[in-house]
Image (tube, rainbow, N blue to C red):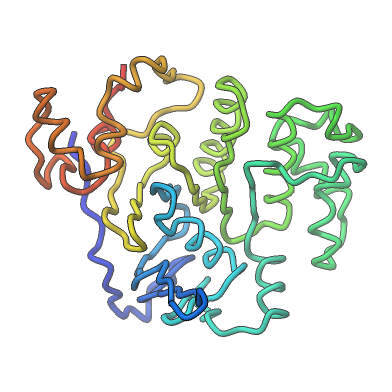
Length: 307
């Protein structure tokens, strides 16, 4: 089964439609490096609808982390517009952006970012305190129960495994009922088993509660668990495709390191060597119907097994 084309990045006006969670239009980001300007993002346009599960991929220096910071209202674009839930937040004050972060965005980071001397329940209550919410204890307990930690409410981070710590971080991101969850390499510090458990949680939350989720990852295997893959290279979106058959966490086992290295993931991922590698290995000729030339590995596009 081949993968489906996304829109071309244009934004038709439809007053009757519910606005997408994320709608960015011709976003640029430039940093001043002494007398020189460094253009990190170069006119990116992107829509993410409610309930989507999306991964953003790209090599180091591609601009994916800068884009993540803008999506998370941690930074502002140099030019262009960013609509979150239909509100243009491109030029809001830092105070207003902090309000947006507290109420509309849940963050999950690679390093968990937990307070060492604070219980799991208290960790999850903190965003509610900043948001001035009521029933903090009950909501924190419910969030922890939703990630399978109802029996770990009083545990400190040192008393939890890495996977359990990341589940606390997921509960903390969920507790304010945000419009979107942004996860930056959420399985990067976990072993394979714990990583699969975390991916199961994200997939279940997206499937059962339609929670809009965006991953930033360099790992094609992780990207294949999401429903849509966006590839960034040199500050531009070079591919934006649906995953025809997403992997199921806990069911589809990751291939061995040798099998992964033998595949075409890295060749397709870094672009310039993909055609040469395909020719050397007798792979498919690249065309738009298979994802070749899109910058997205064909295994992602076609949903095929890697082993």
